[in-house]
Image 1 (cartoon, one colour):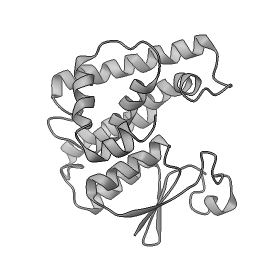
Image 2 (cartoon, rainbow, N blue to C red; image 1 turned 60 degrees about the vertical axis):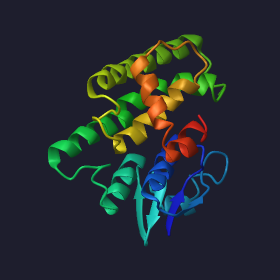
Image 3 (cartoon, one colour; image 1 turned 90 degrees about the vertical axis):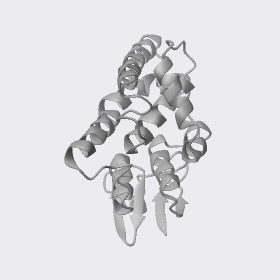
Image 4 (cartoon, rainbow, N blue to C red; image 1 turned 120 degrees about the vertical axis):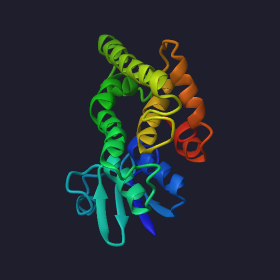
Length: 207
């Protein structure tokens, strides 16, 4: 059975949990981080030398970096609907996954930590406002793309890109600040809510 190391509230852990739900894969989740066992512990560093969650353990092999794990599991199960096997189609999915984990994630961190997590180190109002402005601008990119592609970020069908983008959109909706009206993003969120994996690990899985 797969082992997923990381606490359930982590957005990156939830990417892997949702992927397992899409693939009907049983797993055991083992708490690390988030106030449970610290990832700086020597036992965890044996799993991941960079000390970050999640870590996937599969038949003695260890994988880390959440988006890489999502891709691995889809490829492992031969789910070409989620991760196409032709180079061009796959690249259209992976470009959104790479953007999510780099540019997109970096927009919301300060606003989220300050308003949702109420972290005392993220309470500068100007930085919260700047982070929120960047986050909304990034969501605007998704709005324009969805208006062009249809139901999902990489086209008309659900892919791995929607797992990682969808959880960030859920985080956008969790921040208690005034959001712009983005009709395509709202339709997208409603589409995601029809999926059991998103209901479990996105909508109802925490912010």
